[in-house]
Length: 127
Image (cartoon, rainbow, N blue to C red; front, side, top):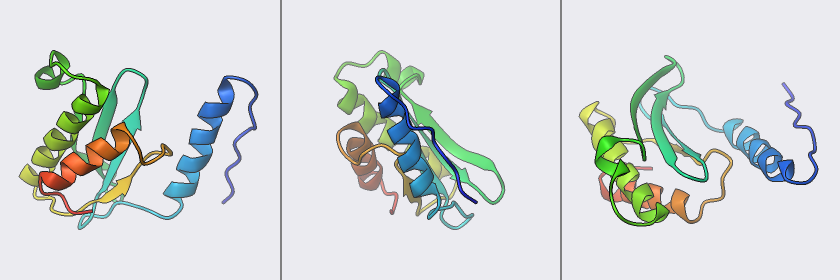
């Protein structure tokens, strides 16, 4: 099945590029009960991480910068992304998840995305 993303102009080009990359990544990966998908959604202000079992269509664990423990904390956006990575790993391990498939959501693996992934690895999730 082919998905098309309209080629945008101006400010909309960046969003269309992220959408194209996300479609390309999602063609190859899917979450299973043994290895659910850790998907990262990034905005200018915050970051959200979810552990999803795609076969059942359920979210097993999630964390974001809007959580009470992270929201009022000090630090830049990368530091908060690390906290989100640690928190989602703890919640996933509480659900019995040991290994995940990483879905960067069309974003480049750098900065906040890499910080979240590294913190989740340090907390015990296997990629």
